[in-house]
Length: 189
Image 1 (cartoon, rainbow, N blue to C red):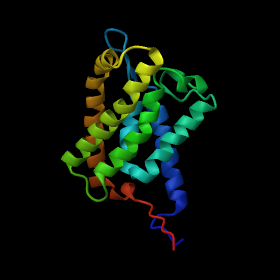
Image 2: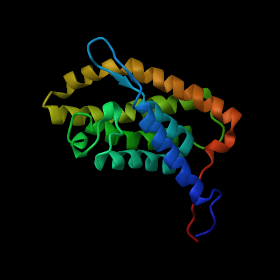
Image 3: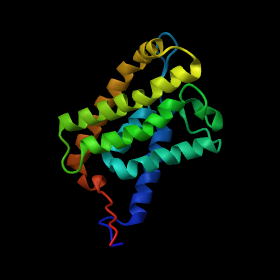
Image 4: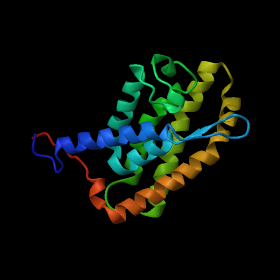
């Protein structure tokens, strides 16, 4: 293996920072009429995908999911334990992994434009997460796919706001501190 442009320790630190960010944003809960709360964790997922890219961002999400699996209360509402992977939100948690990869692939390397960054946040951070989350929720709850998808629409306004926030934050960070977007490219000799 040849040397990477970024030390492995730097990527490990970035993974830890974004895992902590995803966990901390789980403390942000906005109640909605009808009892469906919006949490900030998907904003952290979107930012991880946009900033860390498709290879490193999944490690942040996996870190959060591993901490939840061992019982730490790292998910929104202080949830943790293996039970969260058997409940209605299990598909959304798995969708985070697909989401950060899709976000990173769409956003690509190099300078972020408003359009490409926003598209990445919406397609990966909402579309990819819902693509896995809604069918798994329907399967686990026994509710047909159509009504489950309609119930997920309650989250769409909040998710669109988070995608807009992620876009603004990412583009501003790109301008202010482009080194935050460094990529690790390990190559096998």
